[in-house]
Length: 194
Image (spheres, rainbow, N blue to C red):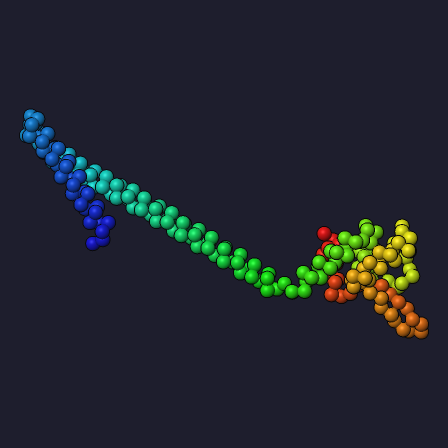
C-alpha cells in the first residue's frame, strides 16, 4: 500500500467518522420517527462517500502542489546549470580567442594604424585601389582624380612603413610594380574597410 493510499484512507476515515458523528448526534437529539431512521443510514452512507471523494480531492490538490513545487525546483536547477555552463563556455571561447591570436598580429596592426594616421584620405584610397588591383606597375596613375606625385608621396609613406614594396620583374626589360606585403594584407583589409 502506497503512502498516498494510506493518506487517502486516513482522511476518508476521519471525514467518515466526523460525518457519522454529526448524523448520530442529529438522530439522537432530534425526534425522528422509525421510518426516517432507515433513511438516516442511507444519508450517512452517502455522506461518507462524499467524505471519501473530498479526501481524494484534497489529496490530489496536495499532490498537484507538490508536483508544481518540484517542477519549479527543477526549473531553478536547470537555469542555474545553464548559467554555469554559459559562463564556462564564455571562458573557453575567450581562451580560444587568446590562443588563436598570433602574437605578431597586434604589432602588425599597430604598425598599419600608425601608417594610416600619417596618410591622407587620398593615401587610403590609393591603398584600397592597390588592395583590389595589385600588382600595379610603377609609373601608372592609380586614381585619375589625383596627381601622380601626390599618389607616389602617399605610397612612399606606405613603403617606409614596410606595408607596400616594389617588386621587380625581368622579362625582356625590367618592370617594377607596387605590391602589398603579404603579412600586412589581412590587417590592411580589416582597417581600410572599418
